[in-house]
Picture (cartoon, rainbow, N blue to C red):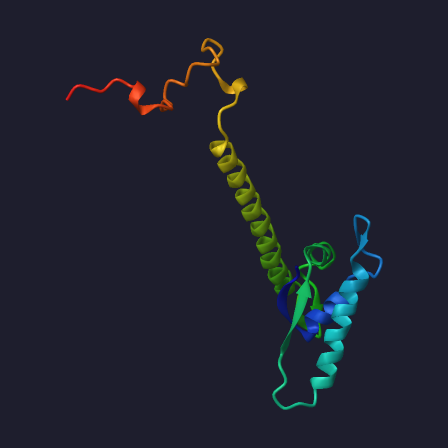
Length: 155
């Protein structure tokens, strides 16, 4: 599921200038899709230029692979139109990458807790019994099946 950042026109141009359409993450071509998104944002800024209260930033949906492509290709010292854009863009991408990592860690934690809960709910098997205890004797800490069979405690 993609995540969103707001980028300026210069940041969109920085992506267009720096990311190559051939950039791949493993077997996946990330560059083309990312460039198409950046081109659409640049075109949107062009169309809004004549509007009196046009937004200075527009949302850009990024996958984790696209975030890594930006991190890999854009340097922090990139400037466009005498404005530093590399650092600001990278900081936005770093936040998204951190969110992606936190989601992975959270899901891994949930999966681990689910596995532990399953282990705690599982009844003891024959393999879990101590080797010195015969299989037909109950576990020492388990309750007997017949409450009348247990001697009463003196009061």
